[in-house]
Amino acid sequence: MFDKDTLVSVIVPVYNTEPYLAQCLDSILAQTHRRLEVVVLDDGSTDGSPAIMDAYAARDDRVCVIHKRNEGYGATCNRGLREASGDWVAIVEPDDWIEPAMYGRMLAFAGTLNGRIDVVKTPYWRIIDADTPEQLKLNCSYRRRVRPPRQPFSIEEAPRLLTHHPSIWSALYRRGFLEEFGIAFHEIPGAGWADNPFLIDTLCQARGIAYLDEPFYCYREETDEKFAASTRANPMLAFDRWQDMCDSLERIGVADEGVWRAHASRGFTYLSGVLASVGANRDDVREAMTAMFSRMDPNLVLTDSRIPPECRRLFCETMGLPAPKTHPLRYAGRLVGEGLYTLANTSPAFTLRQTKRFLRNRQARDKA
Image (cartoon, rainbow, N blue to C red; front, side, top):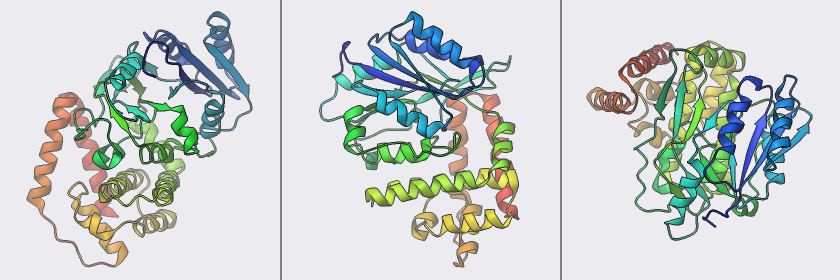
């Protein structure tokens, strides 16, 4: 189950990523764990991606290529899950790459543990300003912060994993577990943040999660400008996916307060991005915000020190609740701690950049 003969199925959903695809496939085929099944799915690409994947399949029999009509990220990943035959399943997005030891180290680590393991999870590398002279390779925001009391563990013992980027690709999933619970992606048009509900459906149903605090996956992060432009184009996307995650939590029957706190915290993170990009004067944004707040437990929101005071005030104003008690010094102390963590985990220049982003988002929330 965790040795050199373990078959890992790597799903690569491709849509028009010609400039990056060779780097991605090279990194997968260079894995020190050699027993791989690489399922590359062409989601109706109109660039040179199909020719690249066909060339790789012609020279390495571990690569299987499927050409299909355009259906979106979720439907394409689901086709990959149906085609996969490995003991474990991984996902690699075609504009990213992975370091050679990724699957070997993850399997070896899991092999040292006792008990059922459904998911093996790691942090990842953030590639900032990729393919420019200013490119940075930085730790993600949960490295060195996930400290479960035991291994393997359940998500209730480390709900922090639910507050950050879904990063579903920095993990291995036991195929039998996915099939047992009927776990699949929501088939949303385009990319559609289909990774959001998949995060909940996997981590919140896993009976055993193994966490190796070592990054291997290199995530080519979009620029702030691109993120803002995509948010302006579809500000409802973040709200819709948060609601989908909420639906999953309720369907699974999650009652743990830590998990629901984490989900509420994610909601305020998404809201901050929307307010910073489009403001709060649009009726659809106000309606979506109110709908999101109505599914949050006021007690969890008002007692969570991770949620900024201005967000709690906005929550109370929107929901017709009394103004919340604020503890500026306590929150200021948390911000200092967050800044020190970011400084130690990344770089001074990036810490300054993140501070500027936080202040912009805070100004947008204050105006809401």
